[in-house]
Length: 160
Image (cartoon, rainbow, N blue to C red; front, side):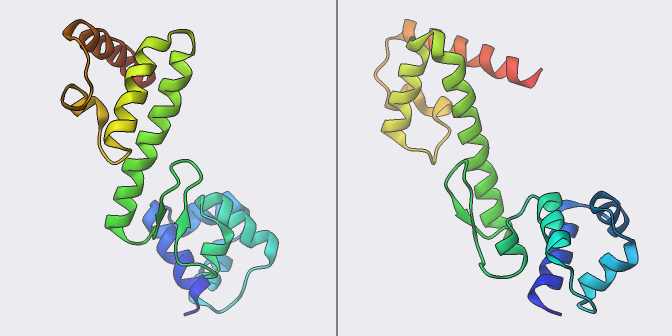
């Protein structure tokens, strides 16, 4: 089994797609996809690009030119087929997206973002700042409560 066929099958399975679902999504037959996964046939560049897009993985990773992916959102380099590395990436990615959304939300109200920014600079991106902000950021009780209230409203709004 080639690197492409092995990765294609592993990633498709990891994403939870059946061969039929994947084949339908990229517009090929299930037997063609099976042949690619078994290493019997090699897909052309257009099919490769469609596969990479469907799986949301870089083409370079899919074809085996690299063993890790550098996420453009959270800037974390990880091996997507390693469970521990993938979990760490998911946590960092989720944190980065929340940060971007919170920054956007705070454009009209800089006070909560100032607290967020202070917390991030103090504890770094590896921790859930909202769980430990009271330890690391020197806020009055009133300001902490306003921050938490704002944060809770923000979290509620993005879950709806």
